[in-house]
Image (cartoon, rainbow, N blue to C red):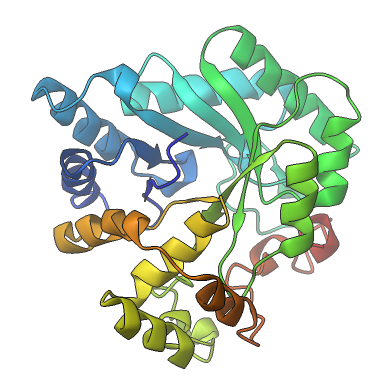
Length: 304
């Protein structure tokens, strides 16, 4: 899995096809997708454009997608994966993840009412993971893993004794370094991928208007000036220096290229220590949309 990839969350149809093409043209070989992003059809066009123009072969790319919450029942996993493959115009995925440890009833995009949720008693995570293993055995996904899983939920899967999750994709940046979860995953040979590595700068709706702005943090700006790069490049380099794959999202050709160049930045031990001691703790994707009064789930089902 290439340590730096292109994220496609919040990349709009009409923009993401070109962004994917530019990314592959620039040298990206890792693309992160998901059914719930509702843009896999356009992502697939960008991939097929690049392959058709001879920029890459399919085997050169590492493509991830994710199982949405409405397809956690055993019988729903394969059809969901096949739909993503069809949208992406692929025969297989390199990596398939359970997007969240939360289950909705079939056809529910975002549950609003209690009757639209399944509980862990209705659909245990172990049932979903067993179906995920079957997709790997069938050759539809070369690797399988999870996303937004805490230690307790990972332990449920590990206790099964079969295929371990190969990756856990989590929100991770200097305001949320997740040291304990990172160490747990390393001890259990689970790779990590960092999403929202730039602090979700586009999440500035009313609810988030007062969130601390990671890319405008004085330390990050100081280090960006020191290294002669943008603040986003410092944040990408920080994740890479920790040995954690990172998937910044952009639809700007210039930003896509500069994000890739961030892999060449060498942060010093002092730089890393200063970032690690940044003194601000904040989670941007707080899970509140899954844990409201109508939900059977709690924040502790998601995060430490």
